[in-house]
Amino acid sequence: MTPSWAEALAGLAAREAVARAGGSEARLEEQRRAGKLTARERIEALLDRGSFVETNMLAEHQCRDFGMETRKFPGDGVVTGHGRIDGRCVCAYAEDVTVLGGSTGRVHGTKIHTLLRRARESRVPVIGLHDSGGARIQEGMDNVYGMTGVLAEFTLNSGVVPQIVGIMGTCAGGAAYSAALADFIVQVENTSQLFVTGPALADEVLGEHVTPDALGGCDMHARRSGVTHLVARDDRDCIALIRRLLTYLPQSNRQRPAAVEAGDPADRPVPELLDIVPIDPGRNYDMHAVVGAIVDGGEFFETQEGFARNMIVGFARMGGQAVGLVANNPAVGDGYMDGDAAVKAARFVRTCDAFNIPLLTLVDAPGFLPGVAQEQGGLLRHGAKLLHSWTESTVPKVSCVLRKMYGGVIPAMGVHEIGFDQVFAWPSAEMQMVRAEPAVKILCRKELAAAADSCALQLQRVREYQDLYLTPYHSASLAVVDAVIAPQDTRARIISALRLLQDKTVADRAWRKHSNLPL
Image 1 (cartoon, helix red, strand yellow):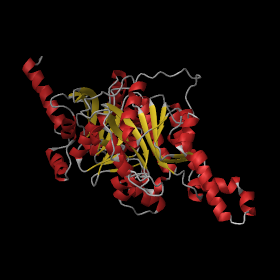
Image 2 (cartoon, helix red, strand yellow):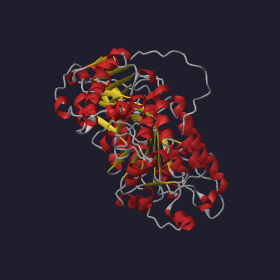
Image 3 (cartoon, helix red, strand yellow):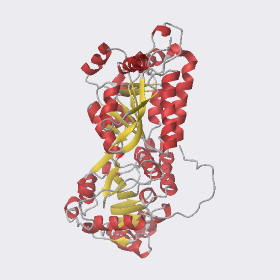
Image 4 (cartoon, one colour):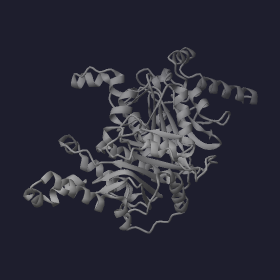
């Protein structure tokens, strides 16, 4: 007998209700008691009210072995669809740990990589909220299609649309790789872990007894590995950070980030910089104070704050326009750059360049950190990543040298030859391949050895070398810097330069399949 419309619609409603119920009401309550939102609550909190349109709601696995034929759930442990954030269209998914542990099987993975492809084709950002035990081993190699499809689509999306991942529970195995392929990772402290292989396998293979937090917790990834970009207090804070981060990013690589009304005069002088930055290059200060003084409203959205703290990266607005900021921090390790700092900056530079975000550097570093540990750790390889990234980037790039720029820092933080459009320097800036003292010891070696008072002569030659080569006026005379500016004019000059460069064009380059980044 053909069912009536009422019966057909009732059947649809029943199936949708089962999908919305997740694993069970008891499992959902267990999630809430743990201080976590459910998958659907996360989606609702992420997107504008009433904007979510779900896709593949009734998809379910087709496995019939190991008791799986009786454990089918519409949706297969992941909620996928599209909606809006502050009116902007986005694609989003949230894994449901209450359904088969949120494990990734063929259908689960297919739902995600179909959504990723749809985001790329529609040129909209994609946001993934992870909470899963990893691959669904009951499906054997059949889950390879789902999982590797996700990895492939994340890779194909890279540099095309922004990809942000929130780690809101366990994220292991292939899912961890998919997170690592995203542009930004936001991890929730205390309730989330991110690792390729879990504690049990580390114990079995290596005899390492380690807790999940020590292996892949928030603190480890934010401070040691540098994998996590932002740390959230809880699920709602994670979602708030994702929404805020998105305001600095465009819909795709074909657009610019939206400008906003600054409410902060572009020509505002910043005389407080004279108090923040000591003119004595031997005295340190926190570069965050400089950043706060020059950007719109003092608002700076820092990423990877706990990793390589001698290097600061993050987003701000200047004159209402989003800008990516890269700055040395003399308050940490005297501002010396190292391999981690170079990698951190290089990744950020490439991300900004991919999404048409202008770049600004604030320079105050005595050089790259010397020593056996750095060289054995691949300092040359890591430093080369940053040089490669600057040269390859085509967005507007402005640099301002506050006090020190020596040796390898010169190409690593901003000169015309590495692709910078405008370079400014304060009157306190010192720029040279080497500092005056070692330069004099090399250049005046014989003269010093023959002198009756070598110490006095050395001091004299150092002063002469400083006056001749280390001042910003020497660099200005060679057009190495475009202008020597008063510190209080820093904000106005940078914004003026960025506005000049906003429609910058780039000369054609030699054809290549892709560059060979020194990974």
